[in-house]
View 1 (cartoon, rainbow, N blue to C red):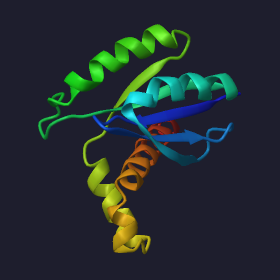
View 2 (view 1 turned 135 degrees about the vertical axis):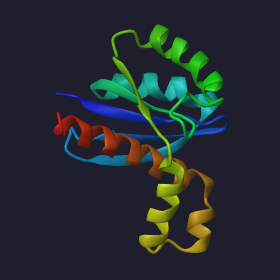
View 3 (view 1 turned 30 degrees about the vertical axis):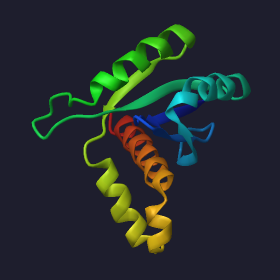
View 4 (view 1 turned 90 degrees about the vertical axis):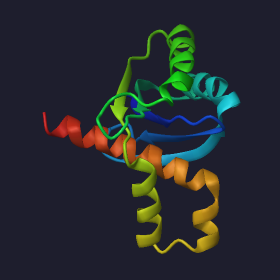
Length: 139
């Protein structure tokens, strides 16, 4: 039984989250520089069994893919080539960054902690993965 891994893909850095092996809860991993993401994923998948990779899909307010997809699409092609046995699922990531900031405020994070750029990316990945887990339970 493997984990689910979620990515909040960014041009400079990516938030990463994984489930436990029972796929009950999502936990953030340290943020990874985008240029190091593929190597990180290969290393992680060699150490841990990953059943599926979930990637946040940026969409505009009308639900159409946003301009950011032009940065994600080349990564998706490489990911499919480098990890061909891993199913990839795209999920709508609208509002995950603003939800992450709101959750940090509600969680009592200090201003300095909230300004750590990687922290919001990590939390956004957790939100993406949690949303995916919730959608699986509603099926």
